[in-house]
Length: 161
Picture 1 (tube, rainbow, N blue to C red):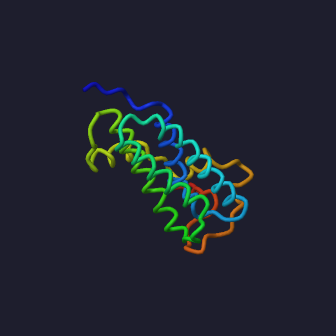
Picture 2 (cartoon, one colour):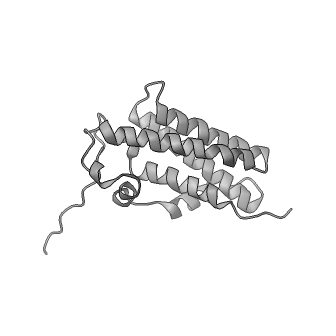
């Protein structure tokens, strides 16, 4: 059995989901929270063609899991906490990574392989935030009830030694 590399669309979907997770976007409120909801909704909608194009039933199931989790996290119909929504995005990220690795290798990837892939794609919160939020939202979110930052993370000032 020959395998083809994962389609660029699948790689882009994984990257976008990771940016939302790494930026701590699920802890935003106000206008930034609305931006996060649209971002996750768009991401879920963009998964539909990838689900249709999936070559195996297992890949379709993984992408369907990612779709469900991103849809629920974005729409939040069950009024989940930010932590629960963040967990759903994390589940979606892992499902996307499994689907991508399955496409690349033609087999079910191990959890070790999934974690290795994801750790290689990690983006620091400050950089992830800058890639998914417009600059006018840098300070536009009320603090999250859980205590996590709901605005662009601020770099600590440099101290002279």
